[in-house]
Length: 81
Image (cartoon, rainbow, N blue to C red; front, side):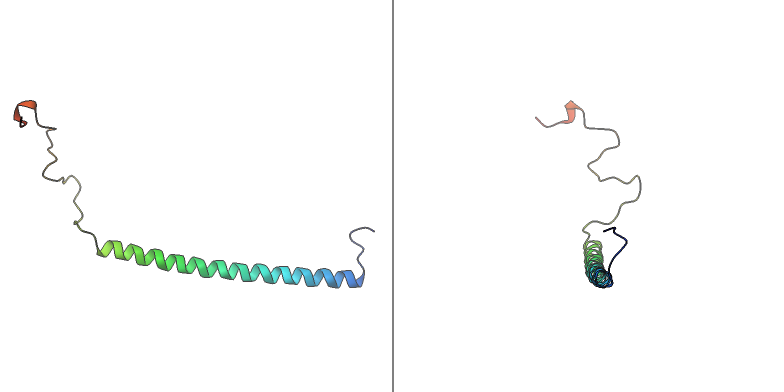
């Protein structure tokens, strides 16, 4: 029997199976969308938390901490023994 020659019963059964499969995919995509929305909300909340709890202020370009000398490490004669 060639694939394109389906009986009316087979055609109806195939339509029902395809309908169920499409419904399953629709529900799965809806679930993934909901999870993605929750993930975005959680990531946004974490980013806001981190930004609000930063311990040190942002530094300007070229600004360095006091211990970082622009002239390199101290020479041997200045080190403690």
